[in-house]
Image (cartoon, rainbow, N blue to C red; front, side, top):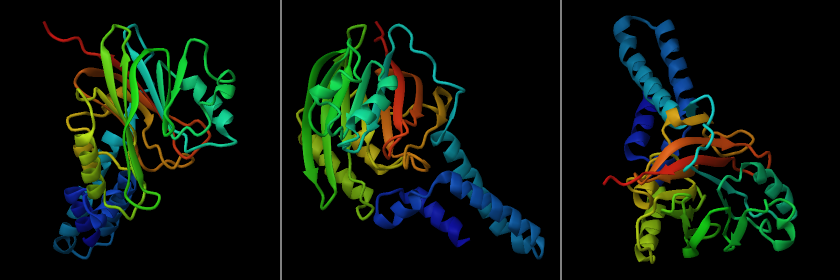
Length: 308
């Protein structure tokens, strides 16, 4: 019963405070399996229906809730991501985690999933001009701001750092602003972010800091897409502050396992790609590039034509 109460508290308060963050971050698939097993054990070794009914009901409720959360956020229902069609934009993102000597290896691993636009957080030496000819297609251009770089065949209207701050040792956060032209000509505004991974910081505090940074930033319009390594799980309070009203790809538009960290055995979905109603989801997946700590994420979106 105590475990059920703790899980319910985590779901209610989410990751706003440090104590609830630890409860909220417990993988839903793990909770579902443990709660389902607890339900079976309680009923198998019950000492009378009245004595076992409430604990079994609580465990069963947790199993159903966490199982549903897993199906909505961690598992894609589609067999494969659809191929891009005319008018679609294929966007990839990967936290390369500052590669040095492995920069070329990581760039070559990313090359097969570049799409129309690839965003690389913490690219290290991947975008050095001397390396580009060994991995970058001839029809694409690269831009590097230090903490983030892009490779794209789309027209780049604007690409700049918005804000950068620190919340302590190894707890930096930054935002960049990117505007590209879709094949149909519409501008697509993208907010790129990287937030602290420290587990000693409550996500509520990070959300407040990020919100203040964005409030002071010079942005002339709301983003059509928010993408990056936000170091928080779906439904986090961070997304209320950074991406209000934006949504991840629904499970019926997603394919495969959605968790991105830790790459060899991904158990948490801490990288995000969210879109506003100005973009339509066509498909989404995560990709194991066999290098680094994160799986890459890739989405296919299409600008929504305004109603006349």
